[in-house]
Length: 180
Length: 180
Image (cartoon, rainbow over all chains, first blue to last red; front, side, top):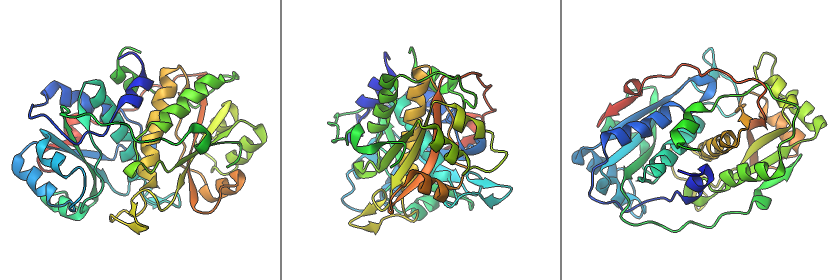
């Protein structure tokens, strides 16, 4: 890799995967990227269920509504990484919520997700972040214990088809000087 | 940069900054990293207030409790990037919440935050993610309109002192096969 910005700008959401396994050492590098992500007071609330079994992927697919453009990817990608968060850690201090936003697990999982997706892309692997599904049903499928939530499912594999980048807001549209 | 994993692993939370300006072209690259982050259905809910004025940084510092280890960084770093999110976009479809987690702006801002911090680090700049402050007071300081929230403040500048990495959970501790 030459340049981080190139990696960030050339990452795409991949919804079509080759029937080709991901080597274990690559999977490990992707998980290492999660491991070294920053988090609220280093709480590291992430848990990752690495799904390879076809029957489990099938059940995860059933938690998605029809029309989700990533529905097929959940069963065709060789791996689905499901990111779970431990509750009442991130955003808390001594068991008490510290900000108006309550639990910060979604923020920390967002950080970890970007580490994961960029790392995968730098290894030549595709991902797509899937947040639109029935998280409670997915909890049952993955036997996630109380005190944790499933947030996103991320198919991981070799892209069969690259996408084109969606339009972006200009920097001048979303940045402000000293006040909003 | 040789390797993305090196960038991810060598990033530290920087709480001590040199009295040295950040060139505009570097700031722009950092904002470009935000621009190219993925988001829920490409909603790109982020807004970034780039704070350079000392008086504004001073007022932002007053929104933090005593004892926050980043309190000094807010006024000594040449720039404080405050990340705001537009509500009722991310996680919504046709104005309706789509998952049990309601608004996903914190997740998307987490993604953008990691892009920002990694990009800064790859340019030789330090950052620290500050979430523990009175977000409503910061909204007033920055004149953030209704419908938006301030989530985090991120000092940006040249590190005066590097930190050591906090301990990480092992991959085997947070990863699971096919079920939690």
